[in-house]
Structure formats: structure tokens, C-alpha cells
Amino acid sequence: MISLLLVVIGGFFGAISRFGASGWIKRKYPSRFPYATLFVNLTGSFLLGLLLGAHPGSSWELLFGTGFLGAFTTFSTFKLENIQLHAERHWKLLVLYLGISYTFGILLAFLGLKIGSAL
Image 1 (cartoon, rainbow, N blue to C red):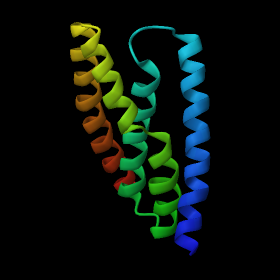
Image 2 (cartoon, rainbow, N blue to C red):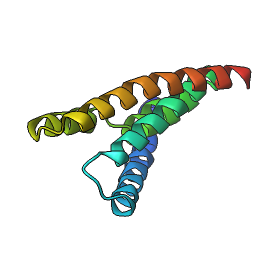
Image 3 (cartoon, one colour):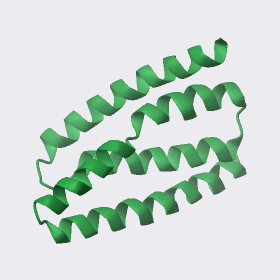
Image 4 (tube, rainbow, N blue to C red):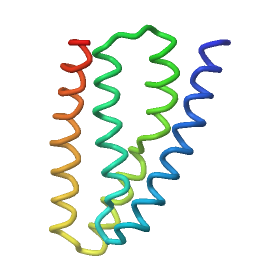
């Protein structure tokens, strides 16, 4: 039961954080390019790598990894934005978004793991 509560609490704060960060980025940088989703997903990739590299224990991993970062990052919005860019024939933005998301997402997760394991 405590595991579920940790995920719920983390998810609550992760969803609110994504909502706030995404809203701020969209207002600050209005664009067809999905900067807000890119930011939360790249940040989440690094932080999850950092967390798992540091091995803080299962409670922290449930609270922050599964809960907070699970709600903060968004795979579904990422996929939907790719479909929208494709449907609107924004080919350059689509390729750029896919390339940056996957390349830097993996690199940042790897960097987070390395830094986390050194802590």
C-alpha cells in the first residue's frame, strides 16, 4: 500500500510540474515546434538516469522515478505531436524533433546514469 501511495504522490507533483513547465514554455516560446514536450522529456531522461545511477532505494525510485518522472514526461504527447507534424507536412520539424528527442534523450539518460553512479 505504501508503494502505491508513493507513486500517487509523485505522480501528482509530476503532472502539476509538467502542466506548469509546459504552459510557461508555450507562452514564452510560441512555436509550431513542440519545445515544451521536448524540454520535459529531455529533462526527465536525464533525471531518471541520475536517479537510477545513484540507487537511492526503492522508495525514492517509486516516488520520484515511477511517480514524479512518469507523470512529468510524456510519451503519448510526443507521439501525437509527431503525427501532427507529419499530417501538416512539416517534414523538417518532424525530422528535427525525432532526431533531437531520441538522440539527446538517450545521451542525457546515459549522462545521468554516469553522474548518478559517481555520487
